[in-house]
Image (cartoon, rainbow, N blue to C red; front, side):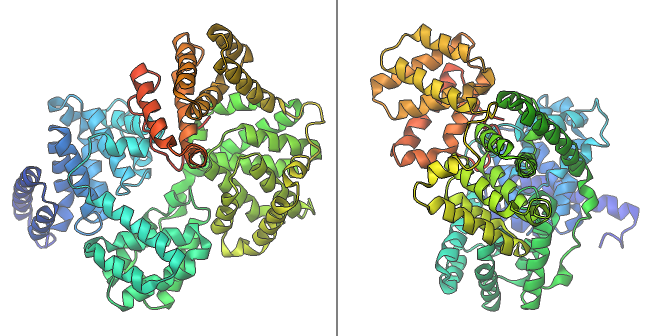
Length: 612
């Protein structure tokens, strides 16, 4: 319709569209009626103009209260891929970035508010993270738009528990339908994979009564099949039946798969070989007749990941140098200190790369280095999912390693078993490694994990696995990390049983490792949760004193609290009310100034600041 207009008609249509868009937005802010706003936007037509609607919606919300800001974010998330095409969302935010200087004239806090809208769009999965990188490459360095990019990256997306912080920044919305439906979809798929009851799953999909949002079911189902290889068959069967019974239509299936294609490079950060896995699923769905490949767009070129590949290559060189130096010196704490100062480590996937390199280099050396690698791995406090990804990557290359190290498969099984014994991984995470393997990895992966399970199931397995590389008998193997942990426990127990506050602070200071004080925070909090009220207050007083005199910094406090959040499920076994206690501690810590107000007490699957 636009192609048939002359310039005058086009300008007139655009002005009319902008005027009607403003009316729709005003009515939406007044009524909070998402369905009405969606219908009016559809009736307005001109789908290629929708980026103007997005720009207007956000710019109007920026100058209003938190209620309207939250409503704007929810509306975009709800209409995405159904009423609003993804490229229009991208274009709308691009227009906002480019006009940030003009917006700042009327809205003084433009940089902060627009940065939060962009962070929210990325968290809500309607804007790819690559948006920031691409725009930072051409925006003027001194522009407000560049400030927005920097604020989004450093102020919101790099913070601990950033997703929950961003989602709650403007308070709860009355229209939290998107989050509620997403939660129900997640529960539905988990229950289905466990029961394999396709009829019940289809009934539950119908009961959701959100046919315009079925693309989210398709998207989440594909991701589950990619993350858990054993779930692939049941997931494909469910989607085929849902298509055959007209529960999910072909348009929604295409939209769901299309969204995955658009974000496949981001998925690759968390799911090894995501591109190949997605292509395999698409091929199987097409062969079964419920997905039309002609309705899908092309996969993005892999050249779009040059920046990330360059970052990974640069970090790989650093990692090799760090690990080789460690094998010579045996200084565990030096490695911790270096990694803590390494900014690139916050990028998803680089910790997994470090794990892979550490084990690979150790397997090429003697038992001394293998023991040192196991000790270092238990000292690093990496998030468990990153360690899992590291072992998945090792399974992928273990046959190549075996060309030089014939016993590589057996040694990899020992490394995984040792990680479980050292509590780097929980036993169930061995199964998570199995779920993430690709079909090409299943043969060798099954051998590795079968050996791992056999090692862990053996009598006195803990002691045997701890001594598998010869224990700590070799000088310089780095066992000092265990000594430090033991010192921390001993000083806390001594103080809790009536010791002197000043003496306890002196002992913490004398440990001489301020970058490891998050361990003091974690151990003190866990110990407090297991004690009575009076003893809890003594431990709290110790942390308060350490913070007050500068022994424990706010950064170390945040890391300590985050590490407790990560192990909440395990703590529940011994302390049933651990969630309530933890919540009250977080509130007290915020009141005392230990934690920033943006710190969220909820648990996250990928706490990036747990020690690093």
